[in-house]
Image (cartoon, rainbow, N blue to C red; front, side, top):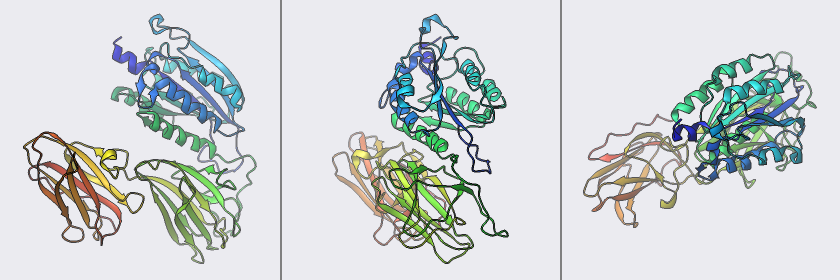
Length: 494
């Protein structure tokens, strides 16, 4: 086997997790069982941004386990730990810690014992993991597979994942691909799809934390056994969404799943709040959509990592109406954000609904927000990028970096999606010298800078911001290249 295959194919971290199924109507929770099945194969000794893969996994998943529900049952399984890759032993699998209470002193040592060594039998590990859930039929069991490569023991992990999903024990497989190549990614996406799960892509330590946080949210947001059944406020009206109860402070928020409709499982009195949390990173926007019930009252606020209120949506005496609160996450603003239901004066009734969505508002399909200075510039190749985003104080400027050839002439164009948008553009070289400026001649028009040229090959920086009389929030398109470039056409915004 080639060294490249060994790098991408040795290692898999299988985290078997249990969460309440989305479609459950009753608020009574089934037992949550979490099994980490950790692949100790050789490629986990390789480095990514943030350190060795194995060290990143230890750090992320030690914290991950401790943040899971306190009443969850936890186990730790490993493979590839005792035999070296040269032994080619695909049966080197071991249950380090059987299911038991979620106590850090019992579980974390199993994670800390990881040491890269042997093979990557993904399929066989899935098959063995199913056996660990014996006697847990009807409970909530989810597998989350984290791997930096593909199966290398001639197994069929897609078939094994489907068999696990169909085993009658309510088992789902989610997958995190950790710095994987395209071939491995295809196999991992197949595993997740075959077992009704979700695929996450993580290129480095930061993205692994984001993926793990999303998985943790889904588990922690399961209804608790103390919840009560959902009543009807009015027989003809009913309640919409699933019942949920938040924490009672910023220190005890309940992670809220995204893309799902909820209502409080109780009426919230004035001066009190239900606290929820969501993990968000650069280039995303948190959008909370609220709708009042027949009794009209619901108020929702979004607070940032520093616990300051940054957006509010309030519906008071407006039955069956809608509103939105939005928080845009700019460069280096990753972290925990809070959704608060309630306010200092008005009550929030349980018949109002809210839904939290994480919207991709990243720049130039990069998965991040372009920084607001040269040191944090987003480097991209010449081309047309129809979707970029800036928003007020959170994201006041986007800076793009392009590498140009000496003596050649380039052009940059930017066009707002909003009909009332005006864009200002400034282009500088690596020393900060001005190479040109441009502005939209009227609202909705292209801003361009012509004849961008360097005597020697090197980088240039393009600074884009909303004009003085423009709306300060919205999407825009950009185009950069030699000679005359085509005009970018972003989707129109209302």
